[in-house]
Amino acid sequence: MNVYDFDRTIYNGDSSVDFYTFVLRKKPYLIVLLPFQAWGMVLYLFGVYSKENMKEKFFMFIRFIPVQKMVLRFWDKNRIKIKSWYIQRKQNTDVIISASPEFLLEPLVCGYLGVRLIASRIDETTGKYIGKNCFGEEKVVRLYEVYPDIIIDNFYSDSLSDAPLAKKAIQSYLVKGQETILWNDYKLSFAEKVKKTYFSKEFILFVFCGGMGTLTNFVFSLIISMLLNPSVSYVFGYLISLFVAYSLNAKLIFNDKFSCVGFIKFIVSYIPNFLILFAFVLVFLNLLEWNKVIVYALAGLLGLPVTFLLVKVFAFNKGRQNEK
Image (cartoon, rainbow, N blue to C red; front, side, top):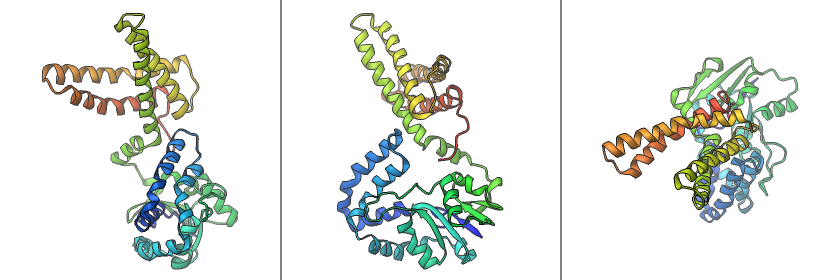
């Protein structure tokens, strides 16, 4: 039996996002829900919401549409996005397993393609999850609940997050566009490594933690300057801001406990950032007399990703992270 992921594997895109944009074009007034959907994403980033809670906020728009009618109209237009390589090798015994909603995929997968489906169970009248998001380890649980004696001959997915299911298959493949690559032969390209590192929840939170550190520096430097020399007050403010940034990084991003050694390593991780800023000021501002806004912006663009890598690998020893 062959098992397939759906989005970006046999379907060219993300079906949930495509469905949402399709609905917005038909009912543009639903854009008023965007602030609530965005707030759900923010709460997820900060660990307040689970992935299920965040997606429930995203799918809240389905409360205001005739779901089944809209889904059928969506697939009338978008079923051409099923990749040709899958159509050519499709078998009636195939199982498609996906984190996308069951109500969205069922008409296409079970109807048009005529194969079996396991997907996230979401109440199509409320957008609320029934059980867990069918992602990662949960895919293994769901598959073996339905087919306890299944032998997976071949498994196909576009994402390394499906590694738990890939390990269960006799042979597994990563799908990139129309190309299928043996799972164990696949190597991330430089561009993919950059995307994985900097287009991530971790990096967004790191920028937030840095911003909170900068705000702390400003506030405490201002307060302390009422009592001490401005230069001395800035040093104290900067040290306090580093402490705040370290605490936020440890709590929000790297799930690590506070330690003196960790804090010292965190401070050391920021030294290259200071040196980059100092070099840019010396060369581009003082010698070449560039605009200071441009100089600081360029220094920040270079220093921020370098500092993030050092904080992640050196301060928190997180050189190897699971795919999300």
